[in-house]
Image 1 (cartoon, rainbow over the protein chains, first blue to last red):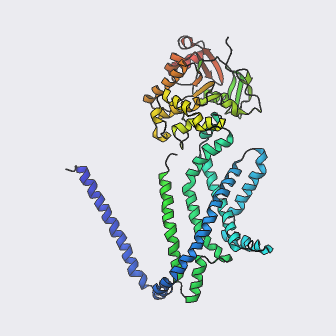
Image 2 (cartoon, rainbow over the protein chains, first blue to last red):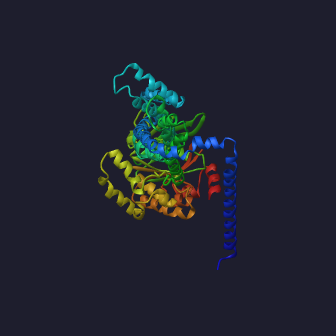
Image 3 (cartoon, rainbow over the protein chains, first blue to last red):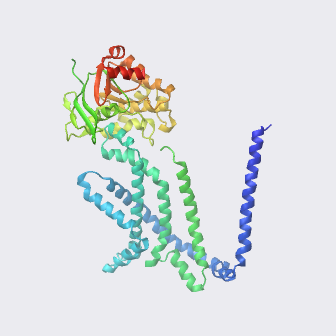
Length: 268
Length: 244
């Protein structure tokens, strides 16, 4: 026999569910009824949501997306390594390391301060412009390097914020045991700091996957470029919608996973 | 007077214009338990941090055995290995199990595999009734258990002296006893210990010497019987009237 409180709670829950369902339904209904009444709806429907063109171009887009994933896959580990080195270099206190610290600081300032597309243009057109022989003039190489430089700068700052967030008492405890400064960093501070910034870095890596599309401006035919080619061929924007859907299939689960990690955060 | 294991001579510590320790002379004989008492802000914690070279001093000397360990330019790392410290807030490493916490420093400092130290450290956990918790993470342990693990972690380096910085102050009252029992046990085994503490009953029961700090100086230093029953200084009497 449920108590009076349980009955009350149950009624409250039912009421809340009902309100949520009704309000969501009302908004959807309004969209479905109102959008087709817009004067340009017919034209937009033809230009962006053409089922036949979608079916014809989707396999090609998917194939082109493999290149996006590949560029991401070789950039990501290099970014991880470089950003860790930058974050540590920025925190070095010994006077002998001053040049290294200054170089890391300058690097981070420069590449955080520039639009990604500008770096891709400058590096991607500038360096091969030196007249380098194949394969050293490849836009894949220099385009990837641009992404690595920019994203390593961002990731380094995130890692550094993680290092700074570890309370000084952890450092004191490690030093009091007789550990060296380097071992304290390696075994006590960094493992905690990196764990703490995994969600933030996940968000950066999702942004990286999207920004791979910017390499299309210097040559590689990845998904955005491929969609552009289809658009010109068929005089229709539907391939862009297809490309957008492909990105979302990857980025939405990844974002949700980052949120899940953020919420979990065990043992720290 | 017996040979001192740890000694300070005219130790001075300043933070900016503020003098926290103003000429501290301590003489700690081997196997002795010394309790530092005094109001909050009297410099007890700062003194312990200076003794462990976590804070640089501004004047005076700290001697461990015959050595002046406060000599400017000395590498503090090997010296800290000989002086264990336990903190008020435990400061266990949250990403490691209790056992890994205790194994870290011996392994990294001596650069030998864990099997080299495992038996001795497991024995330490056993000795302090913590065997069941060796493989737990700090957030799975009570405050009292965490603090006992922190003591085991410090002992794992086989220090000559142990420093305890108000190690029961952050604990719920019912957990204080188990931590004090560990100290009793260490005292019985002859460990040289310096405690900053507010546990007056405990200090009275076990300390060899009580040092009363006030305004950055040791105002009074006496065995507990004399200290608690016949304090010489007015300021000691005022302090005792407040805490007892």
